[in-house]
Image (cartoon, rainbow, N blue to C red; front, side, top):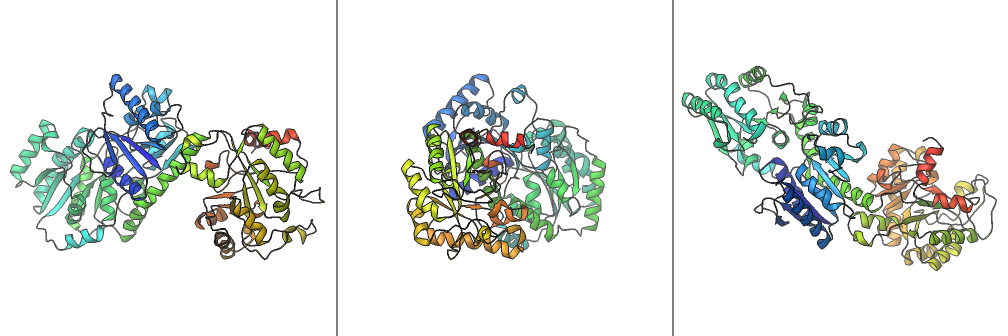
Length: 615
């Protein structure tokens, strides 16, 4: 995939470090990654293009829009990922009318500017870094909930054991308390008040503590705060230290006694099992324990509230909390907290979730209207007596294919769909009006009648086969009195593989999965995937639920088995990307008229179907 990140870097922030770690992970996976940003000195293996993205003058914004648009077109960019309001604004206009979607990660509360009200500047899909922010985006910004994804900023935890070993070999004289965060803007104001309002009494009471302000320079503080800190240092033996920016923050955190901060500082401290007092731009959580951990996660450790109401800080309470904690000096975050944080923010999980958002954005930009997905079964020469009516005759199928051709629809497979969504195929080659034809069970007449017809029209589809090739007929229906029909043998199935059809899995033996034990259902699902991959020599990416029966548990099993999609029957979302494990398929019956087939091959049919049945 060719990925373009656009962001502002007029000052160093936690979000910048997050983007650089995400970019590094993307490059390791073989993606082509470029970054357009203000700072051309960032250390990254990505292609770095310096451009004044944070300059909000209208003249420069116009230049930014034009430059980004030209870059997208010249480099066949699959997706644009932005990380600030300014970068989202220019990227929104740069991607207008293009097949390249815009994904925005929003790191904090958004001001309700005019542009937000009149333009969907955050693009096709939005990543929210914490639950409180999601509530804000829905409730106050008015963003559609179905385009927002809760994905926290990821972090690398691989070096923790080595860092811990170094820290354990040090013997600090002082109990060092690190207050980590910017010293400009609102965060700088909060840090200065903590140093000058909360700590004077503590420095007097505990001569073995030192306060380190990490993340900005002394000159960034307002003059009254600088004077107050100078006075405190003269009184308390220079025990307030302003370090500026440092490169070894995790190592310093491990060697410290206590951490104060928000955002990435918070998750980093807990992952290192260091005591954390979470305070950010929005609220104060106090010492993080198992009891208030989720509350802190929801606010990104104090940075974000779901509403604009700000309760203010109770500095006396903060001082009392610290005093009690320092006096007892017995608390460390539990292993349960550490493991939960590491699992939640693991960069690999975050990377996978973000790329799933990319795929959704690409697919929805390419095909904003639902793609018709038709479900066929038997294709006999003549009509048959069947209670379930799951057949169309060969002559009827010919008429269907003629209608598809007449309407200018282009049959594709789910394999091709995924290739476009993953950026393996260029967006500009995507068909404008795709349709997906699926055939379940693998009947012998599919080989005798359907495959030659599809070849005649130059079409390919998806055939869902049973993993157990010993099953010779449709026993699940025939043994209950319905019409008996033979299934294909291995040589006949091979014809579909040789014709480059997509092979999907339909369990091993065609049971009702919801009536099996968990173990039995999982074996049916995962063993069918393995068997068909061995038979076809190709990845089996899609799964069809037998009889269309499934529940939440079965959907999860299909995902755990390694499938990328699972297909339902006349159920599911409007779009494939609404839920890839509940893809809506339209059943085709022998009595369907030309008018009905016109409806069923139309992108609006699903909406009509749901409206008619009030679902």
